[in-house]
Length: 613
Image (tube, rainbow, N blue to C red):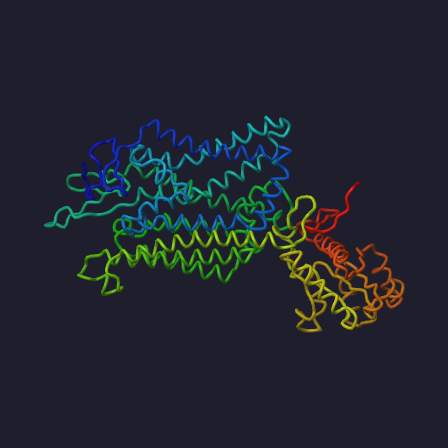
């Protein structure tokens, strides 16, 4: 049986109203509900513990390196976050914005709720847990229980495998990483559960007097205001609301912000500290100037999924105001995203822009659905929009949400295929691309390498060096005068904005006025040099003694005797790769990321390598 203003209050306490089936359905047993909850938390804990355990097993090192290399090349983490963020917002069109999709598609939205880790929306019906206060307690505290289970599981596994390092700082950093991940995933759904105690809907009670009565949408058996014959039954929920409001929508983003502020210096210097590793989920995908972008994106999601409920809490779900505001916010964020370009990789930027564009379109389609469902006057949907009913707009929303998933899968596949075909330099120690992650340009620096050369005998060779290094080191920024020089009078400025200066030693280089300007500026500013020797006389080269004799005597010691890395430039591919690796190693060792390293062995997949017999 049904009662209540929307006929969605079940007479039997052991039943709950299923919107998908349109009727009251028996609640799962207490044992089953508890089992689902505990099983969900244990699953997370087991996965985290298994990952921690595998990290310490010798046989898993090769597999871990391969998986890490693939993840780094494809960029799975930012794509995962973009996809999850899109579905966390789009899945609540009906609940928060009153956009009622066709009943045939409600199960599709239930599938999308999986991305939010919404305990009440997926695993356990909220009305089956008990009173509204109990639901709030469960919603606000279960993520902390999950973090506690995960921490205990990881500590137990690590203690069994290695007792001495059971409580070291690296382990604490790993626990913090998992806590950040869990809070990041559940924050929108938990915030929405908290705000549900403020979401009411008003109904006419007495047409003669105009008296109205409000009910809590999360529990239609509770009244939200006091009247002639009823009391405000939600007043006792206010302390719960404000406590959890401070704990989740306020403190979690502020906590993330505080962690990023604390890790800002080691991240900027690219020092591998336990805190910088633990917070890498929040900053690793963004450029150095956008360390706090994740916090901004979290605020956007919290606003769209929960804080928007503050807009007309009594009639908001029946009106267009919330949906209009959400469409404006999404379009504005899309504009900021396109202009700021915070992502390190362009494919992640394009996917994020597409997600926000599709989200804006979903809200616009939601406006159409709300208009088509209104019965203010006859045929309003067709007159204003051109649709016979809201079904067409519903189909459009479903297509948009499905398209986002399809595009994400295609982007991941294309990135994986491209990464597998790319021939790039790798770190011998880990097999990873050295410039794929992390900050490699210090503050005030624009280029990793400045190519200093004389046009008459070095132009062709340095063009090859630039092209090859940009292929072998994705993300490397290289200054070459033919591409980047705007004013010859600003050579010293260009040197100052470069981390390393490559001097291509060929005939005439050390007699060139401008080349000597570049060398003197580099030495004066303390810029590290890397010397590349053109030894082929037919290509404008000469012996080292001949090239040294061209150099002013005052500079000979600072250039040739200071111990700068030096390599002969070769044109045979296998030998040329050796030359390029020496240049790349010298370049990388002067980046903030590898500043503490003495050497950085590199390899190129498929190259001929020396082996012990």
